[in-house]
Amino acid sequence: MTVQKSEPLVSASGGLIKVISPGRVTGLPHIVVTRFAYQDGSFYVFGGRARSDWVMNTLAAGTVKLRLRELVYEAKSSIAGPLERSAALEWFSKKYGRRLTDSWYAKAEVCIKLSPSGPPSRRGAVTGEGDVKIAFSDWKKRGLDYYEGVAEAFDSASEEYDYTIRNNFINRWIRERSIEELLAYANPDDVLLEVGCGTGAEAMEISRRVAGIVATDISPAMIALLLRKLESKRRRHNIFPLQLGAAEISRASQSLPNGRTRLAYSFNGALNCEPSIERFPAELAKVTEEDGYFICSIRNTLCLSEALVHGLFLQFDRMAPRKRQPIMVSVGGLDIPSYYYPPARFARFFSPQFRVRRTIGLPAILPPAYLSDAYFKARSLLSFVERIERVAAGTFPINQFGDQTLFVFQKK
Image (tube, rainbow, N blue to C red; front, side, top):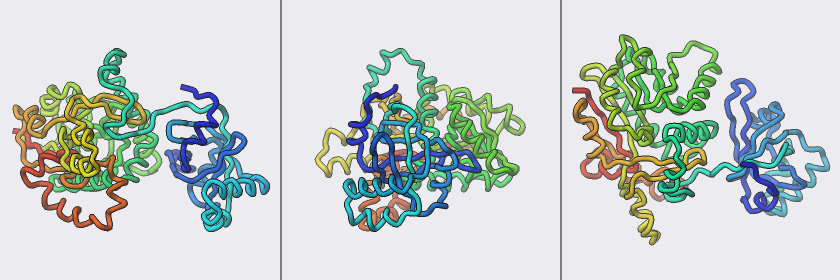
């Protein structure tokens, strides 16, 4: 949707802008968040070093994308002239203060002018579970196809997905912990199967330790971005992307050696976006070797740390936001239904074909990812919690109340 008369919205949107440019060599999205001034229809930003990657990418591209909360612009990039630079420094002084401007921006090697080529479009900002803009009942009335809606949402998220994960401490913790658990079961000669690979960040790390990975995802844009990553490496790789939904995972047999895998995995709640979850275990069993493993994480209906944090701030109405299912979540700025599960119920879906070998709260004591910024600000005082997390996460009953639950299933 195109937004007219954006000046008042820009003025009310805060002090940071996201500049998204294609990498000069890889063509992959390169994102930087920086302060800006807006004047006479153009944005002005400062680069400390003229040869920093984001500056060179922005100028080499000629056209970049700007993200200002919910506003998305296509903008032409150029080096600001001397008079424009001086004016931009004055605007910075008024907006951010003379001391900060003189300390940081007056000495910058380059001032970049970003001129929108037209009015912005509006794309919803990524928010927490309780901050979506549409209720499930309203979403349902639209008569949308669920799988198309999920694919569209993750398509929308693909460009900024890696940046979002990388800049969120809790998300990084979850990713590292998940990969650590998976590698404990992996053998060097395994060809793994990933369900919901996203942009392939986990696959690219795990692939160094195994023979190969068949990486599947329902989102065409996610698969396309992973293919671009692999092409940018300009060397032989062992990851094989495949656009495929979870409920049809048995079709991955054509890409697996002898049609099966000893180890499959699905991280970060990809299975929460599979409404036909009851079908999935049987489909997975068709492509899993006898005594093979499936390691996955799903979002939980009750997160103890979430309840405690909101209770501490007297936000009692937000202590159990996941009680009613499905819950609406924001993915790529679009609201879609997602199905969270108590660990015992989720395990029952798998009981005909798989047995539970291990259950881990992910995290069990640390807060959920959408509260990461608040935790990180207090991390110097609360870092001891991370040490406790390591011990407590796999201990019953604490392992039942994490933001996510990590399961190790073994085929019967």
